[in-house]
Image 1: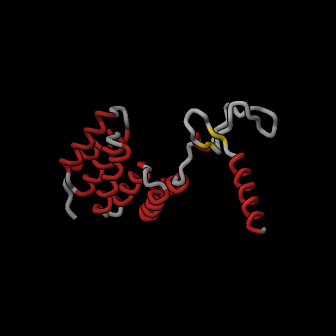
Image 2 (image 1 turned 45 degrees about the horizontal axis):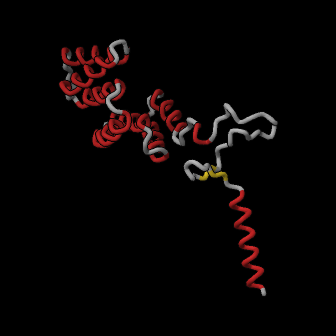
Image 3 (image 1 turned 180 degrees about the vertical axis):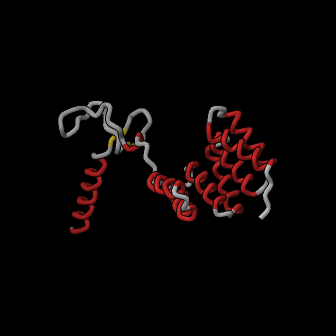
Length: 182
């Protein structure tokens, strides 16, 4: 007798759970976080214009990237690198985090790590002016002036009015003219 009661209770529970899901008849996909066209909020207005979970432009790495940029601006490159690394772990497809990690590694002269980060950044964001400018600066720090020039010129072609790119080209030309030994 108890087996029949358990079966009836399990069936009732399953029916109640399935009744709470919304299924679109056209594609058969169950949607639990998107309101239907006629649904209203608890305040009596419609859901039109409200963002659902799939519309939100927030990434888990946003806070880490913001903190990392502050550390980088303060010339705390080790801290910036650690925070950019954290951001790449939180959101592996965040190209900005990878580019920041590469720049931080350049500043602490870990070019082996920066090369890996630049490679990943290029796959995610492509050849942007920021990418080529940062890569050019990396080569400038290494003393590979020809590679630096090539990348700075690519950045300049993509963003001719960018003051950072123009300044880096001036820096490159002055470093070619004034070789200093330590």
